[in-house]
Length: 222
Image (cartoon, rainbow, N blue to C red; front, top):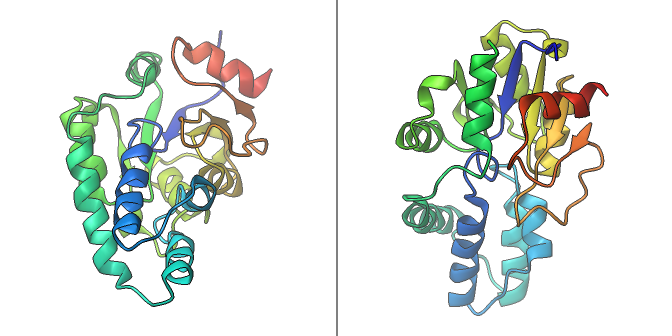
């Protein structure tokens, strides 16, 4: 089929690499050390944004009755998460979709609320870095997802209009960001986000495993 798009903008955490579970487990460990729990229902609200984990800290502080050093805990969590992701493979179907998109002549970018070092390092480790023409990360914008700034920047760097690209996301915050920037959006949730409300995406897939580019596009234009 003819592909009516010129570019794809990918989320990173939880989409290209399933790093959502390790970061959730890292925070659960840190919360447990302080005598608190971190229910998945609380954590789900923060997925896809670098700043929204304030909600998790509010839950923690309410649980233990005192303030905590949030930035120190963030650094601890990043260190724990890093150790747990050093050997993670791409999510099933992702590398194949990236390869197919490049063969079809599409331009690719990443729009991530994580740091450049995190995204660049993992893409390089996985042999996927050369497939991407732009990496847009939280250092590049004043506001991360669900704000549309990351997607707006990706479009600017690729020289594309919103209708010329589509996004692939795994979380409600990510879908909101992409849609607010004017892109069509496919949602492919991971085990952490699978139970979340993704109905505002233009098309929802259970995963990218065994899914061709034509099938992804058909869900957007069909």
